Image (tube, rainbow, N blue to C red; front, side, top):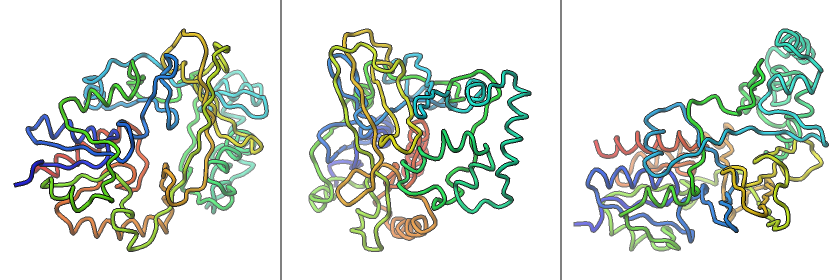
Length: 368
């Protein structure tokens, strides 16, 4: 008899959701994480009264009512609305592309004028079968917006020229012919009051959690503790890279405390879309929760090449990596004891609401 029904490797959002669902069904869970804290990449840390998003900005948004109701069991959410500003060499534009963007770019005022200008722009770069991201983007939005608001940001994000990136990365670019600055179209949106760490802590209430515990270093001992394993780490690392290494993109953060500045940029997130600025965005954390405390905390986010030992943030879902992942999935499917979940276990990037929905769907399959 095992001591636990489930060993859940990873105390991030997927692992915490799975642990909560399992516990509420009467299963006994042990959650472990190699980091010194819970909450994975949604971890927030109180710095002088400001909840700092330590691994980049996270805004919860969804149109899935069940997911929203689940999320609200563990925290009250504020009314934060994500309104991103793009900075191109000192010129400020609204994101996603809307009437404010088009007015600043071209001086148009009405939706009809904007539509006519967009059609004119698209005609300048129309390609029947785009061969790369640049051709795809210009065919969708035209050269003016592409060159100022897409090209530099995208090349920094992926670490290569847009002409070297596959077209499928940008399947569509959202265009709104309204004066609506809300980045998301979802029915529900907000930030958990008190920060994401408290939210995950409440989700894990009554569940045993062991931090600073590396599953791969203690696999033999930990495997004996539970009947089943839910693993949210890198699937290729779990199999000791036996079939090869999957590729990722990483991030580097520079956080600065500014005790004498009450408002640094006037917005939670500003994207820097020119190629010369080395970071992709600046986050001012106090704006996520409408904080009025003295001082501020700012984080600059730098995309980085990933190498072994770095935190893998984004899977590189090109054909080569997807084919390799499919081979690892075959290995995983042959083992009825271990289940892979999360962005690293499934080698795909999910928004937070999709992560919760994914964990719930997977759990129903695991226990059926």
